[in-house]
Length: 408
Image 1 (tube, helix red, strand yellow):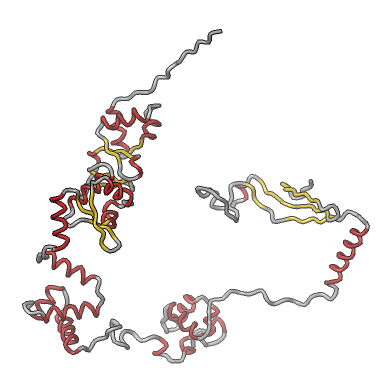
Image 2: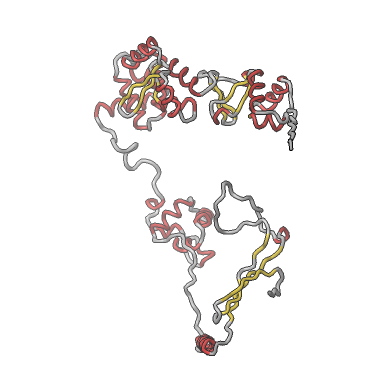
């Protein structure tokens, strides 16, 4: 018996390149999967062929899944462009981008420098480039310095690395201004005084104008450098700044003398019964302005702290309270000895059923989204869990009721 099989080919969707270009202009970036979803059931090979015909460029991040047009990009000085965390390069792939960056560097680049420029991990790509001979590297202590594979460029890069060119006046001024931004008050004053002592700088007035500081500050820094009279471990000398409230009023209780309207007393200890910002506000209304931190500091020095109420006070128990439990235990033991059924019943808290938050964790790739409020009107029902347990037979059952008087 002969079996004849016929193959029916399903025609795939086709689209012009201009349609793809218009789609990319609208979305800025696009993936092959998005093309298949928006333009019909085309194969990945066909989609990539259309992208190449449209002159699209793939990203060097996200494993090259995203594509865009060069006309939509705005490359920086390194030839890089980023859109919503998706990174593109004028050189295309990451390896070509790293080679171009190293070739353009005047003294080579470390891996950390390259990572800072391209904003993604470069360790694997750099090892691949070194193995294929597209880059060379030299180990410096515990790091590698990457040079160009071109001998002439590599020779110039090593020469610049060994003997860097002297800084120009513009570069020196910029470096000096950058240094001043990270110095504290004492360090800036001493640095200005040192600049004033250097010959050829024109004295205190010219240095003050150049650094944007007061002439008196430069003069003070110069005098402190010459005499050595400056703090080495502090920015200012001890005693500077505004005095604390405790030193202005040595008696802490006097700070709260007018706080007796609410609690019937005039001591600051009574302010500990309030929130610190309330206490500070009432002290300010009484003519003694104190900020919340001042009140907190004083209360802490007096031995106070933010505490919650503790349920420790127990009322007097009834003298016959324990007799009922003894009676229950006696009846349970008697029923067990007589092989009579002994049932224990318990119920738990009522729960709303539906898309509500509940305590506990579970393994998920992403958190489950639930309602932001637990309104009973949004619930599918109200579950009442309870269980029955037979101590004699060592068996039990668990039930979930949906009405108030639930029964199995």
